Length: 127
Image (cartoon, rainbow, N blue to C red):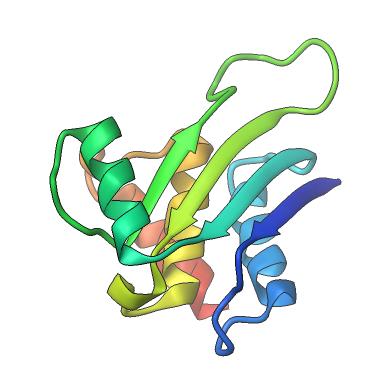
């Protein structure tokens, strides 16, 4: 079973139950049905600091993903997928941000593929 910790106050338009459903759906699309991840909602100052520290970009962004186990096979205990950090004030579609972030945690990268990640993201959001 996939465990999802929702940290911070999810916006009213995106209840925690929907965050869990979307994260589970995105992970399942990569064949991952058990493990742990966290989705955290932060303000613009916090996401700008994370973006600068981890990507060298001194600006706010909508979503950041921090994978932990990645594609490495896990031999003991549940898989630790990582963290998704979302800034609601810089996010047009919160549902999309959750799916996008989790797809990055499971190893997808829209900057390196030929459009597969964004196509899968659109398909998942249409469900």
